[in-house]
Image (cartoon, rainbow, N blue to C red; front, top):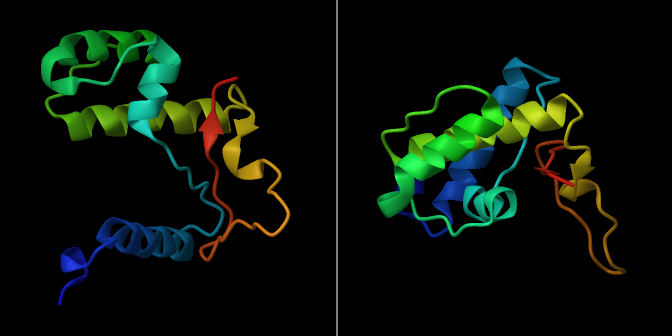
Length: 121
């Protein structure tokens, strides 16, 4: 069975890409995003690319300071993820959800090294 046919394949394939990136670029910052929740946080509206793509492109373009014209939901998600990486790496979003303290008996598992989950304040 191929990894794509397994439950959780996105996590498995994501880790393979992450490991390859770390192998090639040892100090590359790795970020995690959640575009649908982030859209709500940034713009106060429900993520609905199917019916609101032009509005979403405009909002994201305003945040990035450039024109955004995505053709698919995946392109939009990639663009907003680039915004997260840019803001986090530039120190404009210093709040890193992966740096929050964990509760007693909990731990973050980072088999591929440190990662960031930058979030607006």
